[in-house]
Length: 134
Image 1 (tube, rainbow, N blue to C red):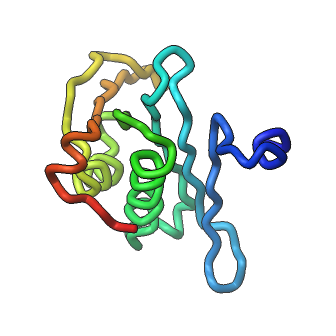
Image 2 (cartoon, rainbow, N blue to C red):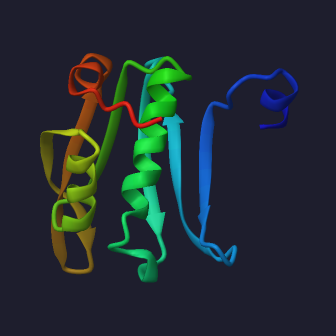
Image 3 (tube, one colour):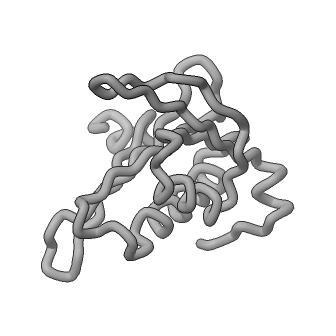
């Protein structure tokens, strides 16, 4: 990060922190470039439970997608979550990501298994949907 700042470049991975009006931590989002495919970024967010359902993940994701396509020259954004994480699935759909598939029984939590659902958005889809939030 220090090197990126000194060279006036974007860091390879970005973590954006969200705070409320009292400066309390409410969540964060990561925007990470794929190690093997330049221009392909993954987003992932985590919020405190008391912050769920307030549109914070949607706003953080919209900002990150715009940043990736407009500033970082991304051509593809990807994200994934547990198949039973309805809140995250709704966020991904709201921000324009499209369902691209699933990996069966990817996660094992105690004695249960859950699928991993995959979402993505290309630069051409972004332009076509006019997802210009910034």
